[in-house]
Length: 68
View (cartoon, rainbow, N blue to C red):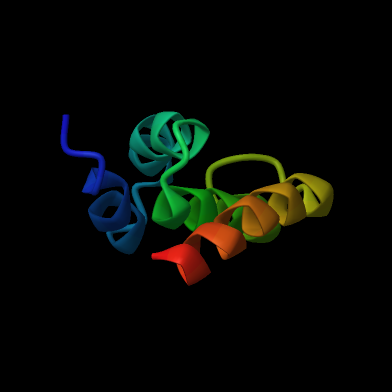
């Protein structure tokens, strides 16, 4: 499975498909997936809007972005 499919799915507004690819990648530490998952929670794209969960994923993504 290509983990970057979540970005394509997200861009096409296929949020259920984006979540299917994004969540496992985010849980495995992919900073881009963590950012997208945070964005989905923040805006309520494909799941219930949850600012606390959004912040959790944004904060996981940020340190990795600076390392890369």
